[in-house]
Image (tube, rainbow, N blue to C red; front, side, top):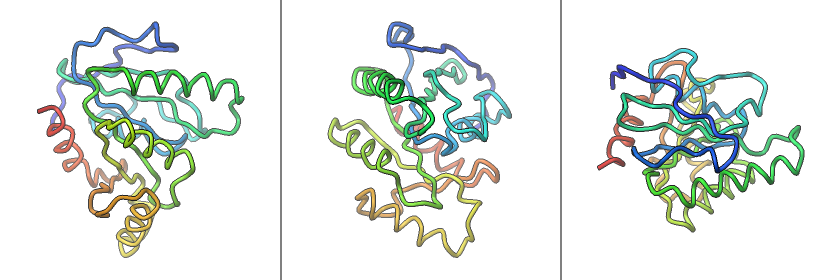
Length: 194
């Protein structure tokens, strides 16, 4: 997929700042530091459109990115970051829940998990919540370049077990560094729009 035009469209700190629902939206969720911003940059072929940081909890707003003026990528704040106060976590939990539950233009939620580790409690809760509310979801295991190729299938099977995914192949492997998985992920995104 060759993106001609991508840019930050709206930054929302609360539900009142959400933009009007006009174009289809693809949302990205995951715990802090799982690589949401890096994945968005890699999908869009941009280096630093979505801000990345080695410090977890960098994204504290919901950020809409316009993609060729045909769809929005929506970067949601990471969950499970301990250095954020409980009050702040609850506030963001409600904002994210409102977005995921009420957005009519939401076509797909891409749930990111780190292939190197068992899913966190937050990952499991998010997957259960999305299933319960029947929100279309795709699980993507990030950082696939960080482990030996011989370990990829074992780790994917482990994630599938923990997240109760029947077929481990339904979990897409992705590397923002090498772009492995980019074409397959774009294919799934485009399928969700039809």
